[in-house]
Length: 305
Image (cartoon, rainbow, N blue to C red; front, top):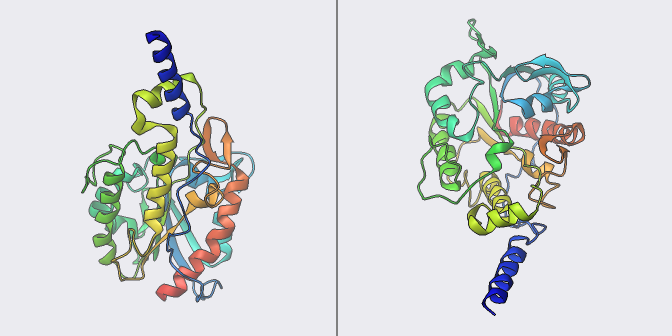
């Protein structure tokens, strides 16, 4: 009887651990920035734009084709979404910083506080990697994103969180982004664009993952997926989230995560490059690129750049 009871209990726990993640956290109650009243026409004058990114950002910018580039700055890539060309066609002068440079290295969420605190002056004049403008030219738009591993949030953490801690908790992530608003408010003529981290590919389920979920329920597949959704919702929620008390018009959030999860159909990537590769496909990146251009044009109009 005891053995049967133990086995029954174990089976129940396994079934609980296997609960599907099909139902996502609600996206209906998230109040996003309303840009509908602004024109999506391209700016009248050229605008210098810097994008700080790693691999996924490089793919998003690249043309679709054979891999051609280095340090995750690509002219073309099999996963290319074509955003660089679209931006150039819309009167943006595009600059990039990625791996191996002062500005582009270290782009996890825990790195943003120190980067903008200590290197804002160089960010604003970054032309490419470690090349900087010396003629007074400045980037009027700064886009930045972390990569998909940042959506593996291990726990809720403890408020108020530590903006410089690389322990992946919701509290630390929120503290990191809260720390940025003071720096951004000191640059009212620069538009800062947060690109949310792309979603993870849904982990494969099996006995090992079930057992891990039982032993460490905070890191179950379901809870990790829901934390990612909740955090990215918080970033873009202008009524109850990150920007609720921010009154200036120089910070916006583009929800790359939401686009690649098909707007809440899942908490995991709907455009993964493979069953264990979270890099978005060319199809997913092209979709995001098409949505980004009218978004940035409207944000520029709203700010009056």
